[in-house]
Image (tube, rainbow, N blue to C red; front, side, top):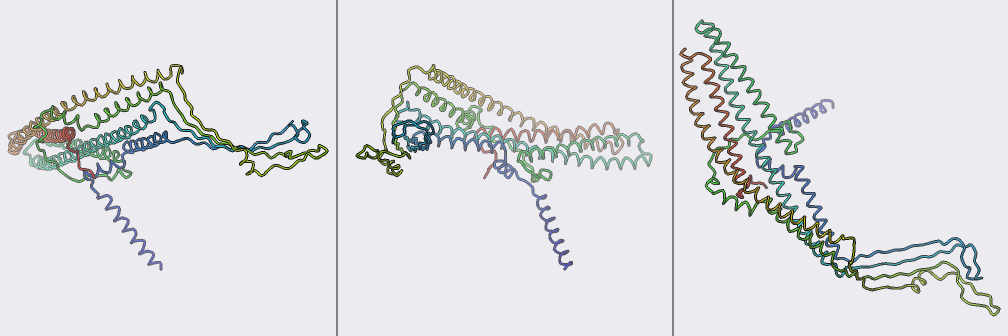
Length: 459
């Protein structure tokens, strides 16, 4: 029995290790990161709640067209000095009463405020949808940027590791030459210093990679972010066809599709509806009403008189009979004409006009900002491409210079200091190519985004 228990424990232990191994080996693609962010990002979830509130506000607007109905019921005890119906005299006694009623009212005309409230609610739903889309777009750009930063840091780390590997071999070779008396011991010290410097660079590259992974994992709201990693991939540099477009063409397309502009336009429409609602306060309102009420008493009642003038007293009638006999109805129309309300309506209209003008200015400013952003993005993308091409040319020259220096150093025609200088310039050129490469890729993504090309295909 004990042996069976041990076997089960080992089985579940191996199963747990297997699951953990699979979890640790997961490599996130860019599409997976963006799709996950769409579901889990806190900012997106908050904006989704705003949309739900807009849906509730629309229900409120619909409710304004419905009649109001209020039911009421009361039961009271009248304790104290009251007239006795049997004697006509005042005496201390307790009487009970029950009142039941219902009031119904409906707006017939209210300066078209209810209609405009409904139109405004519909526009608010559209606006919150634009806000949600804009938030999704912003998060997508942030995810892409963070993802590319990880790729850059990974490739940069590989460069430093390869360089360190080469320098360690160089240090071993120099040690042999020193032992053989071919080169002075000072050359070995210089090589060791170079190895130490490159080790520091590698550690810095490792830290940069770790921080970039943590940044993306936190952006995705991952709980177990310590084991987060992305799929190993290399993105080639291709000259995007977007650079064949004129900046004005990209700007005109962006004006049609950009969520910021659509949101600003919708806010202008909402402000116009607010102004109409405020102006409705100048107009009279007509309201229909209907009320029904009935009552019942629990006091004794006088039902007749004897021949000797003695009153005949009976108990209260049944409650339902009293409700039927005492019922009453009231129906009518109520017209309210605003004459003077402390300038409230006038001030509301003035405030709405200011809000409308502000929303128009905001729309105009968004258009200017978009134009500046598009032209800047276009210039930056072309500049990034030229920087990458220049860095690639520099790397090619530095690589040739390094190979030449290595040949001269190995035959003793170059000292270790000059060789280290050539080596450092070569490594720096490699890092600069990586930096300009991913800077160009990201800027291209932004420019394509303004032209309506999706940042990444999401589900």
